[in-house]
Amino acid sequence: MTAAEMQQAERSVIAAGTSVEELMRRAGQGAAQMIWRIAADMPTLIVCGPGNNGGDGYVIAQWLREKGVDVTVAAPLEPQTEAARHARSLWSGSTVALKDARPAPQFIDCLFGTGLTRAVGDDWFGPFCRLFAGARRRVAIDLPSGVESDHGTLLNDIGQYDATIALGAFKPSHFIEPARSKMGSLVGIDIGITADSDLRILPRPRLSGPTAQDHKYSRGLVAVVAGAMHGAARLTAMAAQKSGAGYVKIVAAPGFAAPHPSIVVETVSDPAELQSKLSGKRISAIVIGPGLGRDDRSRALLDGALAADAPLVIDADALTLAGSRYGDRVRERSAATVATPHAGEFAGLVREGLQHRIDDSRALAVRSASTILLKGPDTVIASPDGPCSISATSCPWLSTAGTGDVLAGIIASRLATGAGGYKAACEGQWLHSRAATLAGPAFTPEMLVDQLPATLQECL
Image (tube, rainbow, N blue to C red; front, side, top):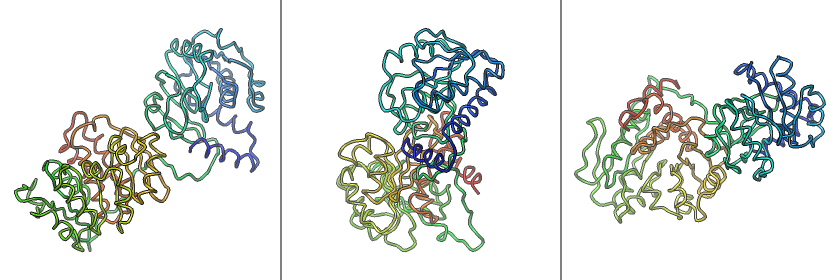
């Protein structure tokens, strides 16, 4: 949940009869139990801020103290909320001023949590960093202090945590860079808050295999439009074939060589012919962009693909060619459109540039009436209808030329098998990430493609 969604959810639970003090007890004791499981006997310093995050810290401190842990609380000032003051009154151990505290082997950060919008001042952050640096193990409660909760923004130059314990619900910044890389392992604590949110962590898809009545066309025909760089189109076609499509063909200029005999190559001498080539009723999905090029012929090919009636994946060079006119060009398409930009390509699609990955992806999805998959270590998938997913897993080895072409083919295959744009993008992203994990380190795009049947098997 965003900070605003979390606050509203808490208000709803409180209005239904659960007190703030009870929510704080659940949060603090749940976090304390997790800390106890991992580092039961480690002397611990808990830094408690003046708000409810600090109140959680006092609950954690008391619970650990009753288990026999050597616990000290450091605080810059007394609690400022009623619930935090209540938690402070139950703390039976020692409390020292933040500036006078000494480091301990384990450091628990309860200074600030969800809702922080400005940097922590040096008068508090200086001692905080000294104590942080003196610890061997560092745990953040809810969010690291100095992290804005909704956009992954670092408001302070924070250090590297070993673990972050989210309270009640994960927040966007638990999965958005640069904050995500600072948090270490992530775990969530249930405190009894239930609320609807159209923002979710990308789940493993549940897929269906072909039935006895299926044939190559009912399983979906993917058409890949090839451009100047043939290898990219081959990778896209191979990925579509190995991720569920029943039939894959490449539409290309004369002289294009198929990656293997089971992928058909259909030639188009004049780009103006492309629309008619893609108008066949049996075509279930189209991909354009991988290796397309950026010359006049490439522009004409893009025009033909945009005019076709089938669902469309737009990637790479096609996004660059569309530029800031992307929204206008795809809004009126009758079939689903999925765009798969990286950050640089996304900046070219919006005049104001990329500021906040979730908000900006959602805005472009609505404006263009298309699904936006913003690639990166914190991939965001936004639907024009409101739902949005964040990929909780990433593989740094995907920073390899050609892996984006593979992703485009996977998404196209999911479109071809009947999924809508947003669902196809979500399924494709999960399969892509999982295949990367199975491929191991330093894989090639071809090795990534070879792992796709195994990823499908996990989802059936």
